[in-house]
Image (cartoon, rainbow over the protein chains, first blue to last red):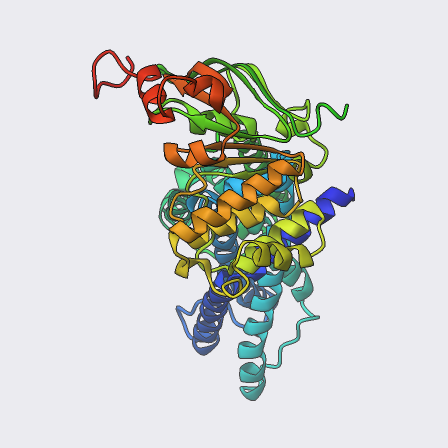
Length: 258
Length: 246
């Protein structure tokens, strides 16, 4: 890796660590994951629960995929704040004065938020496991991270959170407004996508939407929603991340910083 | 790069349009090493846009702005060539002034101790570990200046650097800029405060409506015609008072 890019990644890491936002958002994602995992565990085995029976592979996969729901959106919000926030706080000028080759700055941001998403994914897996494993063990349904193909799901959770981090950074660079980026992300992921993806007449294309593709990657159980197989879901999500990042880079390079 | 070019700021035929408004219109001037050049003009004359084009933040529609013979965006080590202080510089409210500077030390490859050195130089040593949200306007100006000095540049480009400074701060800034120019480096700064410019500037560039009105030494501009204020007002007078150039 060229020395300049290493320096810029280190500078972005320093930006990330010198405010507390990463910690607050990580706490939110951990609480979400812990709460949802506890609910799924408590309701398991009852008719109408959140997951299939946790003694089987399908139930365990759905349980572990919950971590992606906690980690990915908050990694995207953190990343959006990290890129679009430079315009909100008017630090973009200082950043581009230090590094006039703006594409390099965006490349460093994409890298650091890909890594931040990875960290969020790993943290949420740990939180989910810490809630579910002792509980289920006490109930006589011992569960292992390493059996039933669970490791693949855990890997998918980390990849999903990492790609969401990268997508959030790209979207923040593209839109240049922190509030619009975060509001847009939340509306899209929690309103528009769930509405569209439950319309079965549209399912031939809604399964390529980023959030639905991410559910395909982790095989998060969503009754009535058609999902891509994991590897295809991962590729489609990566495609979204790359396209949005490229558009955000082009626009940032061309934008006047006034 | 020749010795003559080091730190020299050259603006030639610079033009920028925002929609139908031409903010800067074929502007040409130079700011030489070893001198303080005051950049004057009424509100909306295009000063800020010109300085932002010099700093590579706004892309010109025509013409060129160079520092040491190169566009800012093409400089190998921009922070070592030019330190830039923009109007209303921004800081993350939750980041300390010291951390702000350390971020840009890392980005530019300077040792982290430069952050403490420029904090001391700008009188912010005691405030460096406080979050920027608690800074006064004068402290923010000092922090912006500290960031501009990180790379120990050969030129300083400053947009209204005295804004928000108290009288003591203004005197301090005057001394700093004067010493900077005396060491053979370039200072280009915009200001509204004409008595301040009269005290400090060796050269003056006056713009109005995005065009050059006059440039020269302070003595050339004011020779036999009273103070800088009278000269400025007569040169930048508009046909209809209070009406923006249209």
